[in-house]
Image (cartoon, rainbow, N blue to C red; front, side, top):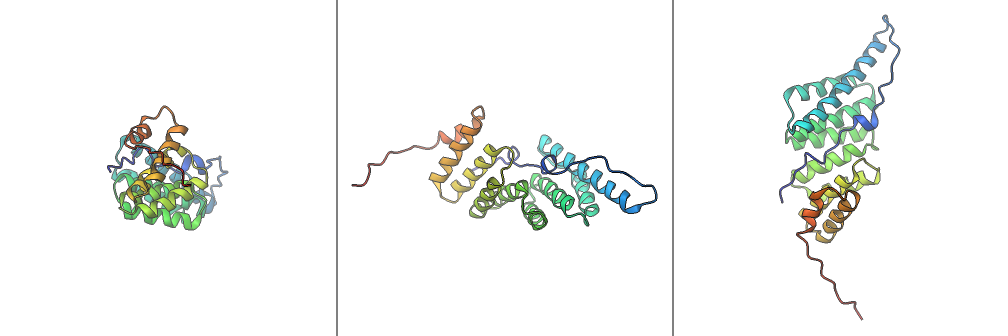
Amino acid sequence: MSLKFACVITTAAAAVISFAATPSFATSPPALAFTGAENSAHQCSLAAIAAQDRGAATDGDLAACDIAVRLAADDHHHLAVALTNRAVIHLMRKEYDATIADTTVALGWDNKLPEALVNRGVAKVLAGRPKDAVTDLSAGLDLGPANRERVFFNRAMAREDSGDFVGAYLDYRKASELSPSWDRPKQELARFTVVQKAPLS
């Protein structure tokens, strides 16, 4: 089936990073470096959001996230978030191996990032690994991601591609229940025929 992933990937910054004002000391390189890392992480998250809005990621978007990853090397929280957002850029560029690599490293630093699990799951579906995708998407759902209806929709596609048609139907139905005004799950559900079986005696 044809997968449209642009509407279902997620960025990590809005849910994970807090950009509170940080005191800066003119004579303190570590403080300045930390402020630079925060700003770069913010620029990376903006690049990931802009790429999704455009439906395409530029070299500049990727460069912004590359800088964020470099500057956050000693701050595991910011590094995990920057890697997750850079994975969005790779996903938009159809660089699925790079998406999987970045999200895997991010999860090594913070295994409670639902966005990393969801985006890795999407990349695995698009890379032809639907069973692995179901595992990641299920784990992402367990962490309570934003836009749960879209994660259920992704998992439905992965389940359908792996031959689990009952699971796919149930996930499309759940996506539709969570977002009644979203037409896409309803369109997918219309392809299914539910047959009532007689109970076994």
